[in-house]
Length: 334
Ligand code: DGY
Image 1 (cartoon, rainbow, N blue to C red):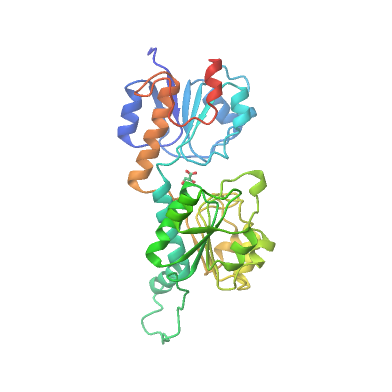
Image 2 (tube, protein in one colour; image 1 turned 60 degrees about the vertical axis):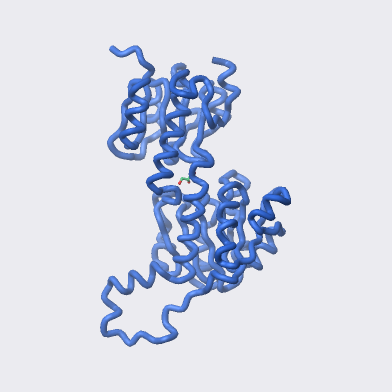
């Protein structure tokens, strides 16, 4: 029997990251991702000192009940709305996330979605693959999209990812507006060439609007029917933040009735299920929550999660000092 701490990794990870973990702890890793009930998760977490979990695993008081062993949950993501931080703090369990390492890749992907939706890349590819091009009488005014260069980009939620998105707009000669609860410092605004406006102005003036705000109960349906009604009929809406920030049913109706031009979504209410109204539409680009999924970035996220986990257990190169803790105060009680 090993006397090393025991950790559970709820999904396959990069082999070198697992090797790094295995030098310090006893690792049990799942060979595939699967959905677990709270009871299954509780059982799994009861017999380990730490765990690396993904965004589909919800940890609340019910999952932690009676667990006196678990010290740390390292979340594979910057967003952590799957974790009840108060419950974890109450149970003396450290939560960590993976900020910063994914900013640029998520910004790249937000642009990929915006470009694809504005220029109808997905629909055109589906049409071509279905064999409609050959023999069709394609017209000069078919497949018209909307331009990106020279237009107004709106960013709702101007944290580090929002700023990375805004900085890219200079290459497309865009005007950039943003809305945030608080206005950014002047030097950051200058660097991003972005101007703060009220949310209503952002909605009505953006040709392309990208959502990057964190999910909180207050942000639920921050883009619902009233907000969609303020947008231009040609506007493109992109969500790389979290499902639930957009009211998916209201969005599907706005897209179907051409009250907005197009949308691109990487995140959904109730994912991995996607509302059938969205699946039925051609003017929306859909992807399975992969905005951070570049080889380099997913590896960096996995390494940061591993470093956080080991550090919380007093191991690895940051022993005792997890790099990105969410509730560091719990460590004072250990
Ligand atoms: C995050 O890190 O929160 C992202 O949603 C992952 O892609």
